[in-house]
Length: 127
Image (cartoon, rainbow, N blue to C red; front, top):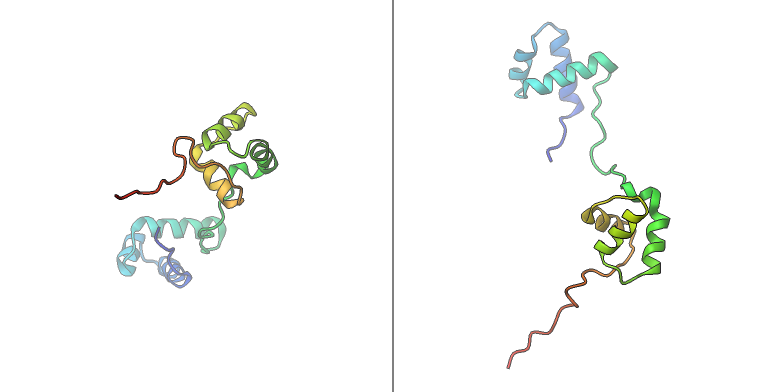
């Protein structure tokens, strides 16, 4: 994902538009897209600010509200697979995908059985 443009560029874009240049000319002048200029001008006119939104690191997992429930399910059956945990959560009325469940358990440092089919790595025996 690309980083947002600097506050300095945003200010210069707004100053150019306020000075009377049209948005197409401002986009060409600064080498940015017309949509970006439209977004900055719209943000400036609606909020009076050109500050960018928070960038990364603010996603909150859907299961955060159910962390105690998930921990109790894992504690009751520590060898349950992700699919089994997902099914038990669905029985409780909590729907979540297996990858999202995996990310949540990893973030909360909750251990679980990885895979019911594979029984761990086997030695590669050479004769």
